[in-house]
Length: 531
Figure 1 (tube, rainbow, N blue to C red):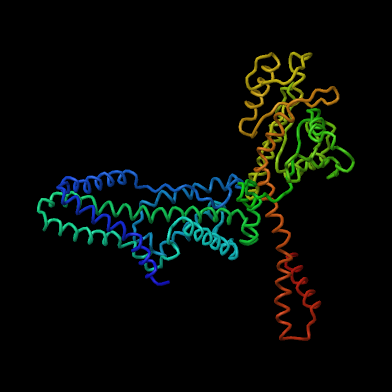
Figure 2: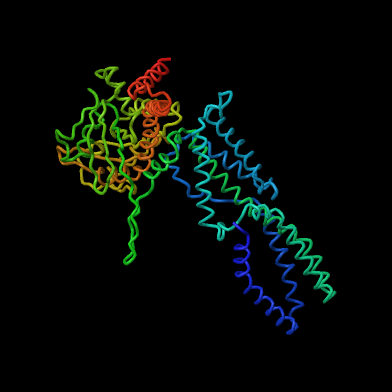
């Protein structure tokens, strides 16, 4: 695009300002106030230089490029690389920040640094990344930068590459224009020499700082974008391509169904996904009673979906919740009647859960088996770097059995306890919090004795807490599904590509039929997989 449209637009914007400045300056000169008002220029520039001198480092908030709720602990640790690179902005010159080769070199260096973070023992960490994934990351960065510039920089669609490069010479332009202006002022009034000396001492450094900060802000945003997608790349979430990644991330977007009268806004609704909730705990801790309270009257033969011999699966329906919630009722542990096979089935169920409810008997101080189970789960997820570990809610059951045992008059305010049972509920929660530390995302007390009409805390505390953590659970489910779907489809994708290539080859070798081509492709894939 020609630079003339940009010049015309800039001229039309600046022309009224120039005219008003000229008329105002003439009036000031005629009134005799020009001399003392002209000192405002060097004074203000000096103050501006002092402000920028001590705030040179560019601080740019994270652009809204995607939710981080799906990030794993390893992903959050990798974010430190982004922050470290942003702190280097002040080390770069304006000439570097407009040079495309500079951005290419920094991209390669950052790509290697992120790869080393995720594969510290690999001799060539970046070498294990597929070309398609790398191209996907580049495409996503380019798309987001385009949107950011179009929406936040007026006239960005008119700026050419040549004009972008000229930003490096901005201080020179300013210095030349300023010198010409001061020369005319000194010739007209020699007393302006003092003002010129003060302005010269601060004007050039000021323009240099402004230039560096403007270009540095763009680089900081570039690093944010690039770093975000390098994390997605190394975590394996870009293996399905940019379109599939965008589609998956849209499932994490918050619901927004608001609108104004006379101006109906298009509602953005989360796409429903399946969230699996595993209920675990020691034998007789109250797991089955909790399942009955969660399901209420929903529990029927059609709701019971056997998963394994020792794990039962139920559909949980919650009002105003479009996601499908699956509850897994697992076998308890720490009991001689539990077989190794049942324990293994329980472990598999928990490892595939998106949210975990750990049921703890309020009357029992024996919590070591629970701590061991949670630590084992945490160790397993730390070895699965690409999976996001589920949040764990500690559910303190059987609070009706706390002293005084015969008293039962809910509701109980354990946040600000006043009655004896409230204080004992609070003490039980403090004990669990001290025992488990940061292993639990939240702790709630409940009573689930439906047989005797003692139900409290499920609707008041547990379900609201569960819904608050549902976004985290959705992210856990989404990350797992991304990897599972890709692993299931990549083999057949190779078959499809072989068949497609064979079909093109058939144009040159008509003797082969389509079925022969498909059979040959499958045979090749089978032999590769066996090796």
